[in-house]
Length: 181
Image 1 (cartoon, rainbow, N blue to C red):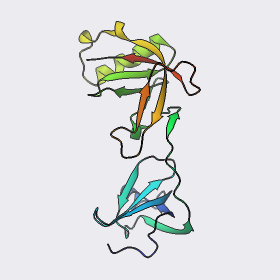
Image 2 (tube, rainbow, N blue to C red):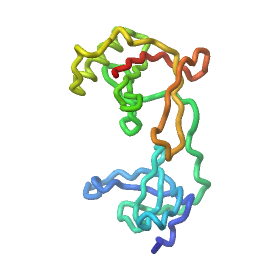
Image 3 (cartoon, rainbow, N blue to C red):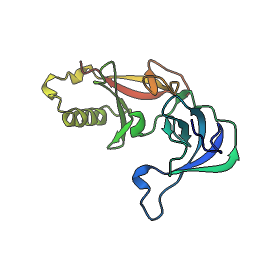
């Protein structure tokens, strides 16, 4: 690997996405190099601040700025968390209701709300937008639970899992679960 002289684990960086490089004042996203990966196309592995997933970029990528600060690589947040809308992690928001698809095939829905009617409205809208025939969905199977969302390790198949019942857990939120299959 032909490394940039400043490419080292723990080096703080600023990253500009390729799509933004030609903008007059492109946004620079702060982050840290988490690893050097010579066997994946000679790349540096970096994690942008506030993100859980890594990017692999060539050490000489024009949108990568090496800063002078070198720190310990921060631990990836793990364990229970309070969900927020985030397309990168499959958590969407519609009409003030946070929801996600889960299950082996990603067909089932979990909707974060205490409002049963609102959960039904969002579920119907999502399913209709996904071209699922609503006549074949048993909405009476939608069940409420106290649930906990938990971050998984970075290389896991899914970034998070949800488990219920979780009554009394400090990070528990009320969800409605709608099995589709």
